[in-house]
Length: 245
Image (tube, rainbow, N blue to C red):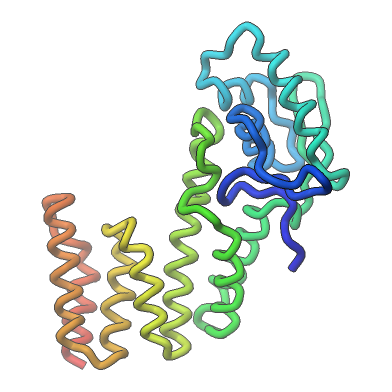
């Protein structure tokens, strides 16, 4: 797989020619991110101003946008031109140009293979997750306006792909790898029921009934402490099912 030239699954980077490396400046980074989240579409100046200035643009906002667009054009490869339209900008990025686009495609393919072909799923999902160099998409970019929802979705998809990978490891008969992978999610998002289900299943596959119960009780403790409630009933059902059989 050719390495994507434009990267937002970590520090914003443009990898092209002599100017390869991080994109400097919070506003140019936010502009590039906003345009990459709508590849091949015209994003209006009003939408971009809201994304860059949280609905309170300075009087010079339009001129500033032109300056940031000019900076991006100097850095972008010819294969991803930034086009000016009346009232907006369009970044023409192909499906392999940006890391988040490649990630989404690989994650979807890996997810579809988890049950039918676990080794292939592991390969695809591992490759997809390797595109991330941060726990959050576009770190350092303020999530104003149109940036908030899509970046949150990308963050959630990273977690989902990690859980898919843990499931694929279980399908391959690799419970140690599944346990480690699901544990990575719980280290930062301890309320993920799916990850707890994967942890219980991994301990069961390792022949560790005591640790199945320990994990179940750990989940109950976390949910009581954080939410004042019990975890989803599916966790209790799996716990009883694994101990029974």
